[in-house]
Amino acid sequence: MPTVFRFLIIIGTAVGVGYWALLMLATRFEPEPREIVDPIGTVKIRKQ
Image (tube, rainbow, N blue to C red; front, top):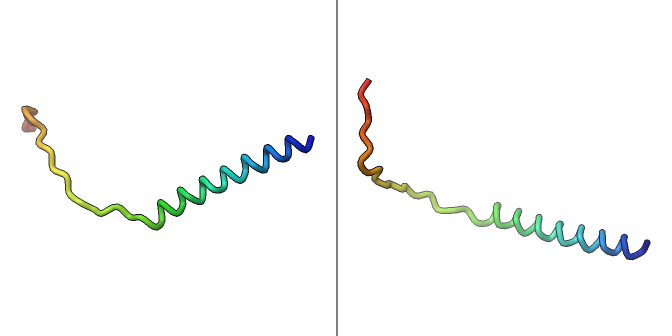
């Protein structure tokens, strides 16, 4: 039974560290906004 508790503590710690790392990446590093313009090609738009 102690090995199950040890396993759960290790998994819980790993999940907590992963969650903290993703949270820090999401809050500390903001992407730079930029405009992206790509030509569509030979698409014709119908007039209504």
